[in-house]
Image (cartoon, rainbow, N blue to C red; front, side):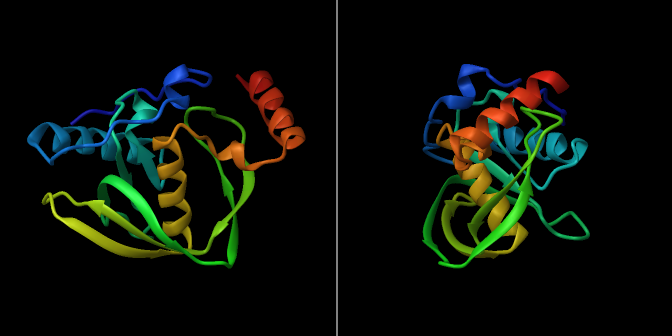
Length: 164
């Protein structure tokens, strides 16, 4: 498959809401394959299709220690989230060179279409949960730094301009 180029911030597509995927087709599976190759090349623990300019609600996540345990998701949505937050240093290949600590629910239950086209509900905990939520944000046109205060967000974006 192919490693795709990540859109550079502030590309307007990163603020757009991605379209639902009506069914899992060979084209969708090919996009997932490219997303996995792109995620592994970063290296990262997740990628949303909008990050590579594909405006569909597709995401891949692999937060395993050994890799090779990728979860392919279409139309993911959080059904339940834990009250307990887990802080984690987050970054994005769309805005390289900067990161911020974001507090997200430690565990989430997510419903999505899997690679067989079946509706699946799965619990994610720890880094898996953080990554899934990060990808779902991308699919809704949000970036991780949107969870920061305005002052911290402005500082991060100023740093990013200096790095870039």
